Image 1 (cartoon, rainbow, N blue to C red):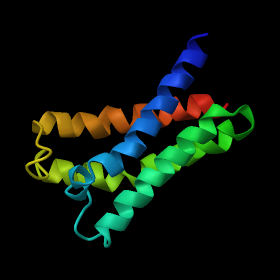
Image 2 (image 1 turned 90 degrees about the horizontal axis):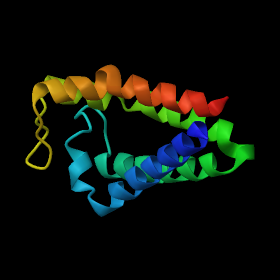
Image 3 (image 1 turned 45 degrees about the horizontal axis):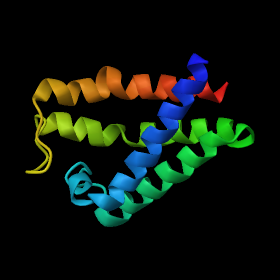
Image 4 (image 1 turned 180 degrees about the horizontal axis):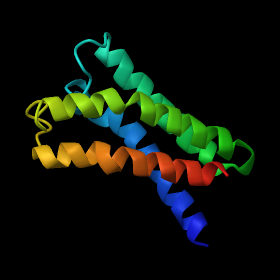
Length: 122
């Protein structure tokens, strides 16, 4: 039962996160390091992938590839977390958090999300 509830929460989390890329795209542009080109495209692609991967979690036959896709995506997001740490938590007027929060987003945050997705890949 706990795993089912966890799966629903993970699915909703990624669906909402994906849609948020379209509802508030400006919040994400500052998170993308300047050495990565095409910020608008990267933001939209991330949103689409989060939505699609969230949908894949819903169905037992596609849950494993969806969970591994989420893990891959979360690994791709690590440079954004490092960039946020380099900026001491402030990536613009939209997103400015204490530096320790920026660190927590990466350690342990990102790795907990990866572990969570991995649990549902089994």
